[in-house]
Image 1 (tube, rainbow, N blue to C red):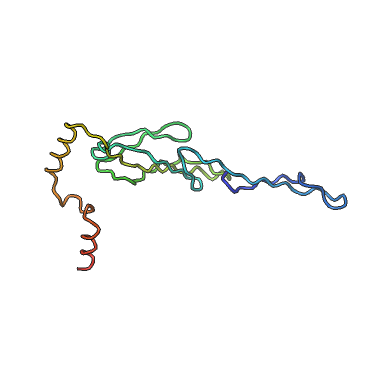
Image 2 (cartoon, helix red, strand yellow; image 1 turned 120 degrees about the vertical axis):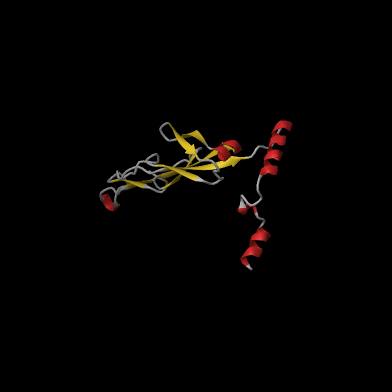
Length: 149
């Protein structure tokens, strides 16, 4: 069931006028939000943080599902916002037409505090990087100039 669904209980409403039969009782459902999952129909969406290293090098991570846990493979170079689909790990359809999917959206966490060794390694990495490797790192203004050429 989902928010807004109505349940009808025939004959359990108020009595009719002048001794007429009782009407129907309708119950409108309001589903409490889940702390981990957002619902879209029979599908669920879950946001999972991954480390910078897991995103860059790839990893296998464990993610929550409604019934247990599942593993997903994070390919090297995964970006924030990438969505992975776990078929059949969503909500069971009320009419019995199957089960929705679980969509896992990853969020890459960038370290906020680095020690001296970590900082030195990242600076060395930055020096070895080709500036043309990630063209999406162009500034907004550089992209705008490219559009109007």
